[in-house]
Figure: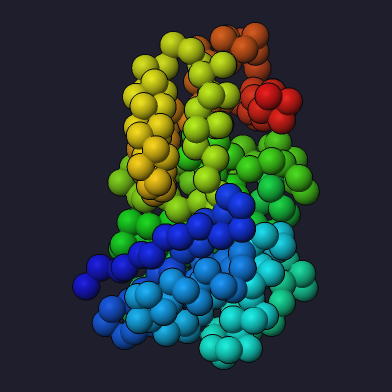
Length: 255
């Protein structure tokens, strides 16, 4: 049986995600931006919370953990590099570890940059990846604790996942990200089609995620820092990809 997903909004622009294994009844919350919407989604679906899989320590991804833990006695899995900053941790994981939610199995991928210990969970058999604030639809997270080189390396790891991998990220930023992407990659025809698609989704009240790695490789400028034409367009011809990425990220910060 395939994994089931329930996606919902939290806080102002966060996404909450529940991952459910219908064979065993196990259900994981990917991060916990706030407890109330997680509880509401669990009630709506008739699911029992067994796990919380944490991508990184920022409060808008962890502040609901303690209340959910107190009520459901669920397991809290967190990145080894940030476990001390996450409430109620039961298990720490590192690159190459496997995390199971019922019979669903994820590989842990370390993706430092946004934070130093950030991780992603790749459920390879189910073609799902939960990437927190490392990769967004047509965007990426700010480089807060790490370096541009670290972030670029992390994005390349995610870019190397199979093209049909569906990506669930931590925030709804797609239209704003597309507006920025068009400012530096005007000649990319995929961006205009993504813009029309995202605008229609937002108008209908629909989420703009998940997206696939294959689609992001064609349109996301942060995954295209090693494309010579893009480097030339921003005056970085011949520069190393990490430097091109740093320039794109700096421009996004000011956009």
